[in-house]
Image 1: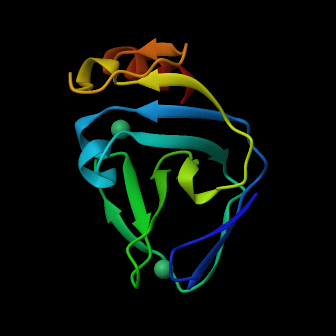
Image 2 (image 1 turned 30 degrees about the horizontal axis):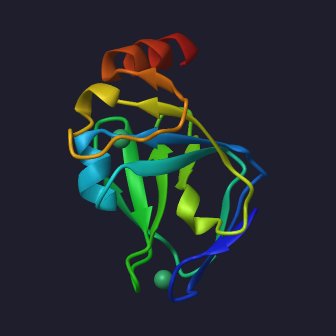
Image 3 (image 1 turned 180 degrees about the horizontal axis):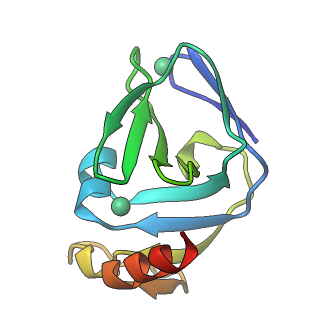
Amino acid sequence: MKANCLCGAIEIEAPNQHDVAICHCSTCRRWAGGPMFAVHCGFDVHFSGTEPSRYQSSDWAERGFCPNCGTHLFYHLLSGGEYILPAGLFQDQNFKLSSEIFIDEKPEFYQLKNETLKMTGQQVFEQFAKNH
Ligand SMILES: [Zn+2]
Ligand SMILES: [Zn+2]
């Protein structure tokens, strides 16, 4: 899949993906201005052009953005190195919304009709501990 930031300074290449997960956590909502529509892209993600700026948002992850236009580019796990990218970067991709995480941090003012696998933050951390 190919994408670029708003100003075009950064181009992104990632392996094709189908599933989108939404994260309702308070950090994602502050970062993205709403829940993050996230695509797990694995390790083989390449950025070209301007070097993305990075902000470490927790002990285990950093978030990247274009230093020129501010487009959000990735959530990156520091241990393991997996990249999780905003679905909106890939505007012509045929995605399916499959899961919602940190459902316990979702505010009341919106409800999604999609049938999804819903996990609390606690369940996500337990799964993360098992897989890493
Ligand atoms: Zn940009
Ligand atoms: Zn989140």
